[in-house]
Length: 116
Image (cartoon, rainbow, N blue to C red; front, side):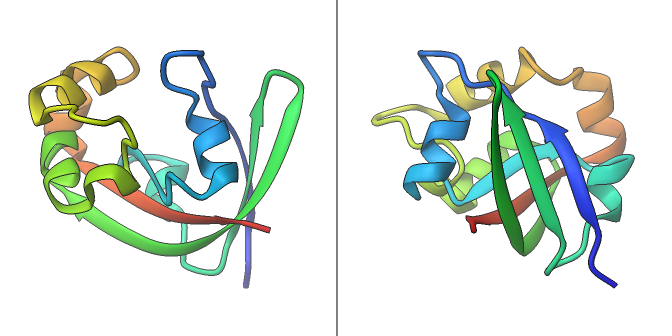
């Protein structure tokens, strides 16, 4: 059975995650593999909320990784559509949102998303 997940997503000027999803530049959302993010299934729906906006996406894929750097090595700009960004910069970027201990304990999931 399809589940509808309601999740907050940051959309700062430097890294407008939600805008990139809407434009199709970003097709994977990276999160720590725990809680709701570990329970999601392909075909489920995510309602992303940011700045009084809601963007509805379907989950198209689920990929597991040890950490965000490994996810970036595989997905590149599908995960972080920033020109010339390095894997170390990606790790530092995600460390602003997620605790290193949680990443080490649970790993990471890259959730394939497609706006509806």
